[in-house]
Length: 137
Image 1 (cartoon, rainbow, N blue to C red):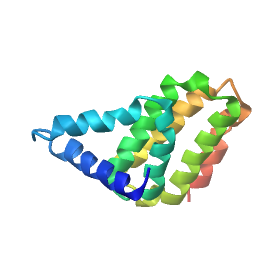
Image 2 (image 1 turned 30 degrees about the vertical axis):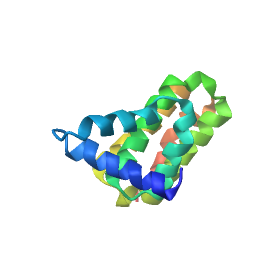
Image 3 (image 1 turned 90 degrees about the vertical axis):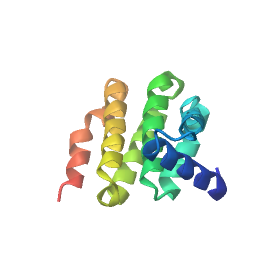
């Protein structure tokens, strides 16, 4: 994904989340839901998280990641599960206070899903309580 593609995704997200009655809505829905169609789109979701300031684009990326990780859980090994979880926890630590509540909630749901699915795979998933304590001032 490049900056031009990111700008297009942000525009589509604005249409999708704010103009549900508009004629462009169905087209926007179809295009942004493609992001949830394959695990190959995980890097694009991460690019959106890393580079967008648009709350709706961030929500789309978090939602798509949750659906993709859930649907393709067995395609990843335990180390990749931990890497994804640590990426999201780090993202929340860096950006959490500046995010819209609905984006934070979606990212927290992703961490919960990763923890639930990985609970028996790796001890690090069971240490989530110690890691989350670092978020509390």
